[in-house]
Each structure stands twice: as structure tokens, then as C-alpha cells.
Image 1 (cartoon, rainbow, N blue to C red):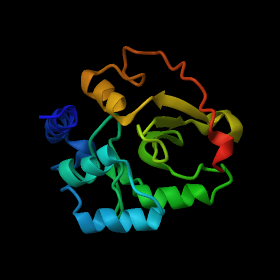
Image 2: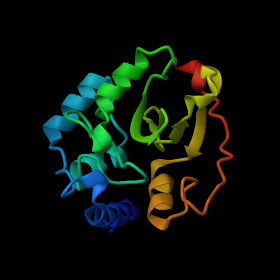
Image 3: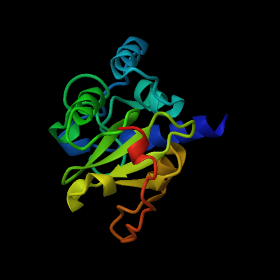
Length: 178
């Protein structure tokens, strides 16, 4: 079994044990057709691990805090729009949302965990606009999606109650992809 397969198994077990925001059960995974429609709408492919989360674990509702957003249709846990809908809305906003960066989880207070789909490792970014300056709203949360998921599973993410270290480096590619 590969490391990715082991990680997906761990995520699936944690996801099944989670009851996101009053849901009775985890949303079913999306089928290949739904994934393909999402990627066509976005105009790019999702990184393999992110695609596997949606096609093998569930259509959102698991992960840190409010959980992953649904991929294409319907509302996510907490009533949030789906990834594709939110990506298009944010791309058209005044924030200059970077091309190829999809929101995957809402932290509240307009903050999002995002995946840079233009990087091979699927770098995870934090969008934190509450300072009011769009040029300083992006931070590197994790070098890759694997590390981000592992931090959630191990309870070591910056968002954990006992971890008050939010000294994340600014993301330097913000201006090159607006």
C-alpha cells in the first residue's frame, strides 16, 4: 500500500467518525462524471490527492474546522457554496483571486484554506483578508496537501486550540496570477 493510499484510509476513517455540522452522515463521494464537470468548469484539473478525496472519501464535510466544501453542487457543511461556485465568485471579486487556487474549506470570518492547483505538490494556502489589504491576504499554510491533511489527522494544525502559532509566511506568488 502506498503512502497516499494509507493517507486516504486514515482520512476516510476520520471522516466517517466526523458528523459535520449536524449532518447525519458523511456525503457520498462524487463520481467521475461530477469530477470531470467540475474540472471543465474550473478550466484545470484538480491535483490527484484532492480529486481522490472527493471521489473516494466524500463530497466534503470532513477535515479541519468546518470541513471541506462540496465540490460542484449543493451547499457544503455550514451552508457554504461549493468549491467551483466559490472559485468563480472569488475570481470575479475585488480581491484579485489568483488563477488556479481553489477554496477547499471555510474557516469563518471570510478566511479560506485553498489549494494551489498549479503546483505539483498541491500547496495549501490560507486566504486571510481581514487586514483589508488584498496584497497581504495570502499565506502559505502547508507546503503540500499531504502535510496539511496529516496535521489535521494528528491534531497539530495551527488552528488547533492548543496551538496558537499563526506565524505563517506570506505567499509570494499572489501578484503573478491575478
